[in-house]
Image (cartoon, rainbow, N blue to C red; front, side, top):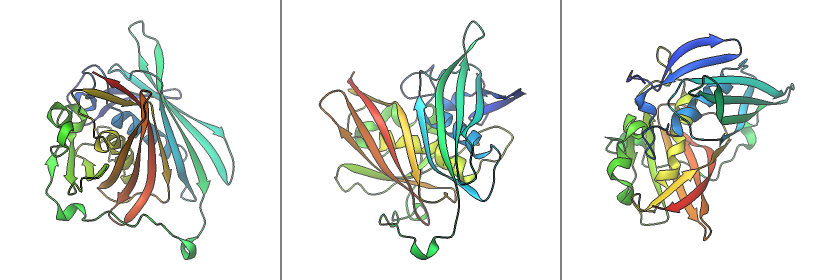
Length: 276
């Protein structure tokens, strides 16, 4: 595993597969041999957005399912069109990790609905408004240092330690609000797009919205679904997240997602919740 200042090092393409080496900057807070959900989601979204791109079509919903532990061995991504169409298509990208015997095991899969666009600006309406104050009016830090019970190693380890965050004042309610941006490129040697930045960081909503104490509870998400109202623009992603915990060991985190111009999307994550 390399410590190159990126999340992944490109290894080239072999047939329908792109191959990558994950760096230490992808490491999860839940284990040193695992990737955090953020970089793999970013990598899968990158594959979707770059598969036969067409300015007349945009993704309106992307769902990522975590199929197993995402290890730090060689990663490969394959992208296919499951449902072609002029107005509506369904595109899939799958991430696999090389095992000790040389075979690849699927560990995450993204599916995105790509729709033909049209001009609906005269009826555009978003009740979520904007997230204020904006990032330029807040003090920044590397990692997350203002999340109360979630500080400590959670706030600076691995992937989380490669993010810049700017916390909004805590109003004492159920959720928290933060602006966040990645400080590294997704893939070494190539620029990261605004959409790729957005999808790389949005997985942290799980931690941002939690009121559970990190040392006493684990709350790993099995999926992330994002419904987009428009495409994100700019460096920063605003997250307004809340966790709901049920009595049976599972729950969910819902978040409203912003850029500096206003609301962009809404996300939902299923949580497996366990005492430590």
